[in-house]
Length: 409
Image 1 (cartoon, one colour):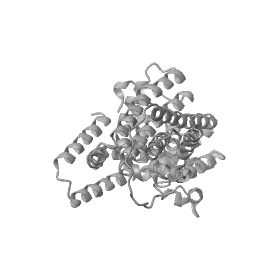
Image 2 (image 1 turned 60 degrees about the vertical axis):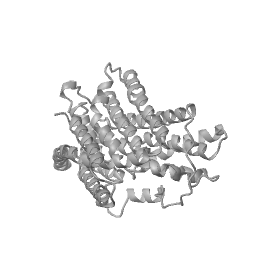
Image 3 (image 1 turned 90 degrees about the vertical axis):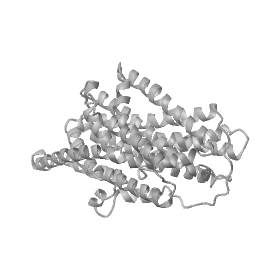
């Protein structure tokens, strides 16, 4: 059975449990929340070891074959371009279609995580390099350590050959473990979907946020079936761009209903290798970097959400300079969410409101009830970028072996 079909079945069962079981009680909701948290932790369990040893091996091979610069340049270009494209998609959609105002609430300000750049930089360089392997949220520290280790081993290939051989073996071992985990996680999808359905049902009650959800859905359809396949067709001259979308079906399901970018990383790596045929030396670099930096989905939903908040507070037209500022800041903030695999877009929205000021400091509270669903859309956009982006890098570096669609997992 195809992997995406297993996850789809798990999602359908999750919806059924949410509709059938008496989940209105506090005890039942707490139980579902606990099980979902365990499932997410289980899914993240292998992420750091898999990322570290695969990235270390990939960087070593890329530097040894003098492909590291070309791979890095194409990866950075795709990350920046995708963030800009998604920001513009969100901006144009919300400017063209005026959504209904959201009723102003009197909620008090609650504690919200902030983007502390100083702490993020410190997290990259802890007192011990081995501490980078213990942080399951900020993957950049582990990736950076892997780059240093893999690059240093090319200095003396004879001396460090046993280390590279060991890292290569551990990378394959972690991949096999990740394969087992991704199969088991399809069962855990029942709990994830059950929890998501409960949240979604509460969000659409009353219909306040339904127009916003419909707009984000249309933006996703336009991006997934129009913009990204067209870019892939013209950039890579691929006559069948939708095969990448089909290969990413499982990742899209998991990312959307979990809202967690790190949870989908092992699935992305497995899909990239077994379905799209992207070689490990590309997979080990592109997918982690896309998971950390390619958060254009957050930029899109932040732009849309902030303008919805602005229009809910004022009936006046938004000044053009303010529109440019909103677009620019949403674009920049999307690159700073690597330490927030879940909930990052809402954090970016709260930061944007605070920076804008003028009475909008607590404006993000208007969308707080819909935050889980908004973050779900952002995660789906991001995993879409990771799948198409990694495929583009694989084609441009000629590190890809095309598989027949019948052999996709």
